[in-house]
Image (cartoon, rainbow, N blue to C red; front, top):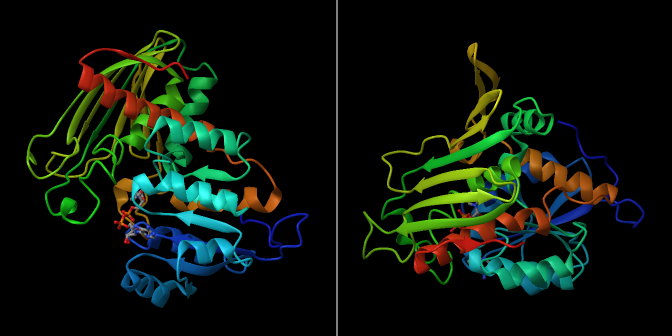
Length: 352
Ligand SMILES: NC(=O)c1ccc[n+]([C@@H]2O[C@H](COP(=O)([O-])OP(=O)(O)OC[C@H]3O[C@@H](n4cnc5c(N)ncnc54)[C@H](O)[C@@H]3O)[C@@H](O)[C@H]2O)c1
């Protein structure tokens, strides 16, 4: 992996990029470890904030940085150029807006927003991907990149269909905190939280959707959570391909997410960060990049660090982010359309 150039932000007089982390829960360890790896490369951790001060202290003890008194204090701090937003889903859009108003660069965890109005507004605020980047780290997986190059290069011929599947285990204990399982803060269940990465890859690899029909249910955790545990979606892509998607939090374990891309000259089988090609001559392994991440769960994928380092390279060099508002929005719009379709029991079109 290339290191970012030591030298802060080109053309601004900022010699060292100051980073702040908002939300010091589970995923913050992955972000902070990536930031630590960039110390000495023109990036430093300035401050951390969480409404639960004990979480800040826990992370500071391991990764350093100051405890900030509030989000506002971070946004007022001239030493901070970048803000990592790692909070419950429904808080993301408002925090991104506030950070943009304060002139910061933003790296926001998925989903970027929980409503189409917020996606529209963020697109207006950062139309050219120069301020907001959203984490969809699995786009950076070597197996994903190889699949994308083969599809775009025409190696599979015409693609007729894609199938995606995520089957993980999230029991009552996972939902026992103050935001998971609530519509007001999580904004949905398996689709908007766990399966959104796989859905994003279905769109990254397959292109935009025209319409979808979905059904979502609460099953094992009926009466415990407000959000869906299981979902299936049938999709029509804009170019008439079909797509089938299944997501579940009711499995007995976390299995690697799977995507099958069915082309006229062969099928690609993506399973986590492993890619096989199946064609007339059998099945061949093309990529096996499965490496246990040093921080975080294996099923999150290995590419958080790659994306975070890419974010800092873009900030440093004044280049647009690969996953800005425009790229981060289609998966969220598909999830929200799936919820609408399930409520209405009918197809929903996705015009943008
Ligand atoms: N990309 C991935 O693979 C991946 C993996 C896990 C989580 N995530 C995402 O990261 C985000 C956080 O998830 P998590 O697992 O760390 O959750 P978490 O519950 O462990 O942490 C969230 C933290 O935000 C804090 N918080 C709540 N309200 C706040 C506020 N107003 N200001 C500051 N802090 C506040 C909470 O106290 C908590 O410590 C979510 O968007 C989640 O979907 C992404």
